[in-house]
Length: 68
Image (cartoon, rainbow, N blue to C red; front, side, top):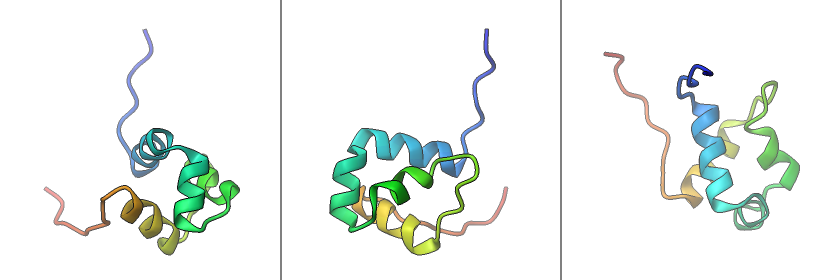
């Protein structure tokens, strides 16, 4: 049995984007479809503005909180 992946920002973003739909997300945010897809790839290194646009469209925001 495969070990479950530890949640990361990229895995969470991938879930949000899949749920919302890549094409719909691209249209709603004004981002290129390739940019939306690249946010979740292993080598992807999205800009802060890209993350903010995707999160805002899905009703989330990026926050910095103390590590516990």
